[in-house]
Image (tube, rainbow, N blue to C red; front, side):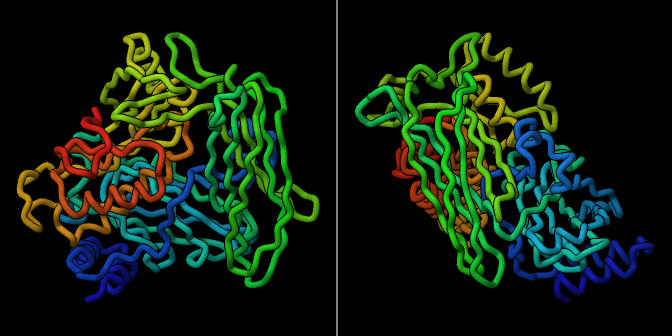
Length: 458
């Protein structure tokens, strides 16, 4: 029996508990390949339709987002843990654009279904995930279901604080002509002069079947609130295509606003606003904050503005769904002299924003934890040397990278928790190195092999 057939049995017998349990067991046992057509990797920033709301980070007024809070429809013991769901009313205007789901704080591995169609299967229960639901939704009532499994992935960090409330999850809407993604950095002049270069790439999309014009722009303000630069560019996109626009203006007097941790002092942050226009009307705003300066890695040392960093590191994971408590704890760590946080798995986006604001370095780590048989270097002897799992390893590393890459606080990436070494870790290192040429990649269990730029991540 296919996974889809088993799922339909769940749908048709919602009121019959034994039928649900039987169908769910069949669903778990079905040897169907994971369907990830709807899973996407991109920077976690949602659009706003007014500048005021964007500056305030207030997404409640725009009509561009809907909170996602699924409720339990079934609980069980064994491989299946629960089926949760929510019926969502989708406005008509959303059906003429792009609809996405940001999913955060599930408790276990899961399958996502929308209107009886499987969107994706995700084994990583700790890293927030994004899904493009445009082909799956319709005007009016839509049925969302999540089939939750117990430890189906087997690679999650074991002592992670689990939160099954789906807090921080939401649906959001973009027009078919919109910002798909971006990369941004504010880097020093190579000759050490008192200015920086804003290295900004804006990826725009056209989801129509025909050519469409769109206006794309940005502005950047100093930490003191002064407008420093702005740009507006008109571009015509072919149907069903994306294009990358690159901007590299000089930002003067940047060394007066260096971002670096200092005891009792928050580092300065520049404000950047991305936007699109159509027929003279602003269509979306995306607000960013970014610090000046990047960390270099040379001769086995972390360098910032040419000086070696003496990092004082501490293992830390954010309090789930509680930014206020996390802020209090981070301020306490600052007083103890810590300047570098080493989480065990990717954190909520607001955590990296706090680290940008408060002045912490972060070594971000993929959610990979497979310590069993870590010394067994035979093929398949450890999960990290089992080629059948290479796609899952790559997904976890990619999910980490695309979410946090634009945050100033990130100074390095770790491939995972100590999990042995082998083919999957080699491939993860190669992929990350191909997209991240400047920040070092760390892995404790490399044990002197080539897939780590530094001896210790913590």
